[in-house]
Image (cartoon, rainbow, N blue to C red):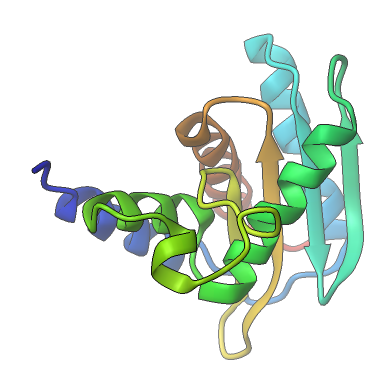
Length: 160
């Protein structure tokens, strides 16, 4: 059986380090633009969705992204809200336990997806206030697109 402990620790570290002191609408727009810019540079066609307190602040689809990605995004968001961890963390955790999210957490597979690409927006002192989601790449690539963009934004100051 494969050891996932290092990867799980790294994913938890990301959630602990990639937090905001404040997250507003302009921050969401700047982050969404940053993610799209990265995708354009890398020649990847994605859908980006950023929500705060249930309200969509940023949603953009590049070419070849249809309604299926919106449904996939909703399922990833549901997973993050349920577990308060990134959807990729839950994906890896379920793999490490040799189970599925449906069998382990008794959730509907049509409503939840334990796959990479959705990351919690955490405000220090307030907790999770929303989600950042990328869809269309392999799960770990969706996750990396979010994380590398978050790192870049937070290094630049993080609030706009």
